[in-house]
Length: 239
Length: 112
Image 1 (cartoon, each protein chain N blue to C red):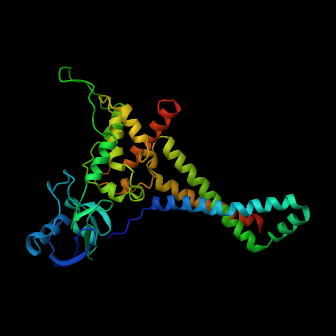
Image 2 (image 1 turned 90 degrees about the vertical axis):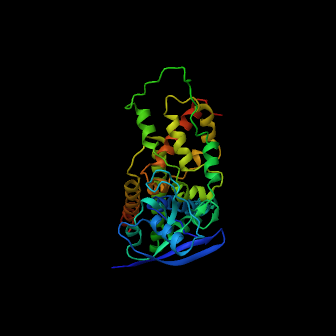
Image 3 (image 1 turned 120 degrees about the vertical axis):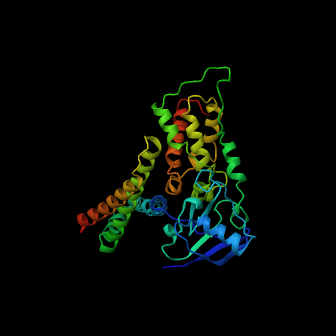
């Protein structure tokens, strides 16, 4: 049985290299456990992000053996098959240092997609009853558990090819809001997601769906936006 | 730093694009043959006789394959983007690839 893991971790910014470490193997060890061990016992200058350690905060995503993953919920045994563990920062975002990448653009694109809730009522109005089984609410619920980890953005070929593309997470959020009957921001959001770099830029490779740690399907959400956008255009609602 | 991780539907999209490029590269040759028909019957007949050679028939099988790949790939995208979402995209892409191979061989068996 393996008693240590051979681990390579990206060190540096955009220019850098993988450094090698031997990390003791533990039962039920996660990739985040490995990174934490390196920082606490082998090299305290290692930079990485994490917070909740239970798959809720979306801050610990990294590239593990070539695949973007949430590291707190990824067991080492699942990804190495007894071999080496190679850990790098997420792709499609500038590297700040080591495993921490700059997510500014990722979040700015959420704003650009108008992916924020615009209330139609005030606190003075009575609570609005929302039926859980309407088709729109079912569609919204299917995409609502996004934790903003950036895994889909890192996995997306269109993001890599087109710097203006808003990305799967922002568009998925736009789709959930499009199906939220309490929201009043659809007119501006429709323009934003139909514009250059919006939903029509998606090439439907479905890497976002393949890699989403919460098993969401942003590709289906984007296809939904494409249908809404096309329909609005045909009705003359979109110039 | 890290290589992109390819998934089956990436290959489906790439096959669709490359088949389109290959078909558009073939198009000038197609127009050239049509041009021969305007020049005269003898020129066209001479060329058509040349196309009876086994090597050309084999190349035509490739052309049928490319056409079917591009047609079915395009239909898959149209359905994906304009109708209710289906989860079985990988299966649909696999069937499209299989149907393209079958269509190509069906053409070859028909002309041989």
